[in-house]
Each structure stands twice: as C-alpha cells, then as structure tokens.
Length: 171
Image 1: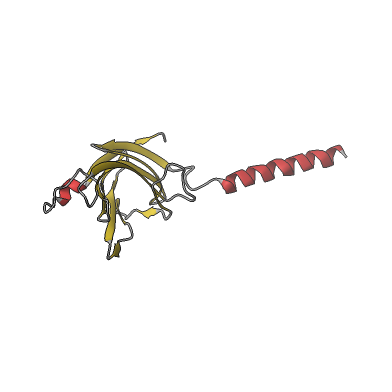
Image 2: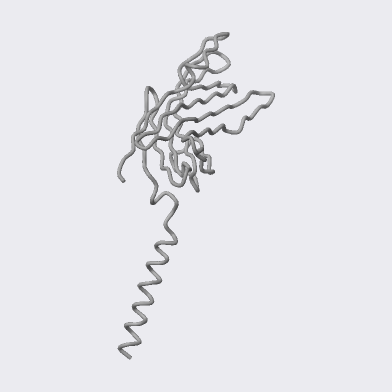
C-alpha cells in the first residue's frame, strides 16, 4: 500500500510538472526588450524569429472636422491572445522576423468613403536591441496621427514615424 501511494504521488508530481511545461506560453522563454523614443514607449518579447508579444504606447494628435484639436492615447498590442484592459488596438498574430533581423507589420488598410486608417511597425532586431519606427494615421473625423498636428495641405510623412530603440533585458 505504501509503495502504491508513493507511486501515485510520483505520477501526480510528474503530471503537474508536464502540465506546467505544456501550459507555458510562447512568451515565457522569450527575450524581452524595452525602450522608446520621443513620444513613444515600446516593449517586445522575441522567440524563434518572431515577435510573440509587442506593446506600443504613444499619443495621437487628433483634429476634428471643425478644427478642434485634442490628444488621444494609443496602446497597441501585437501577438496577444485576448484583449488587455488598457488596449486601444490589438493585433493577435505574432510578427515574423526575417533572417536579416528585419520585421514589418502593416495593419489592415481600412479604406471607406468616410476615411481610412493606416498602421506601420517596422524595425530590426539585433542581439542586444531592437530599433525601429511606428506610424498611425486615421483620416476619419477626428483624424488622428502620430508625430504631431498637421495643418491642412502639408504632408510630412517622416514626421509621422516615431523612432524607437529598445534594449534587451534579462537572459
């Protein structure tokens, strides 16, 4: 009877350990990068040539059709399952990283008679850092963008892209 109980305990411990290993998400053993730039904060987790988690936080500069200006917070998540409580945008698919270390995410380009949205996240993953840029544009009312307010008729796309650098933490 004692041998049977110790065998049962052993089997139970092994099962718990296997379940813990099986339920570990892709993010668990990923390399973590954190950083930012002027007007942007980023966090990424990279595993097996993919960004399995990404978070971009910034401020959008919005102008309504009557010319009223206001700021709107953007917290965009990439590669997540479920919707974080503070999210303003969620993209559930991990972002692939090419052999060269570069990546490119172009969000769905929604174009309708009332306006369009455009989102771009691009960069390069190195051993100790990720460098890149992010842009968000929406022409609906209110029209919102990264990089600052824009007067009618002017278009400086380089200003729309926010540059960032994230350094590797941990492992």
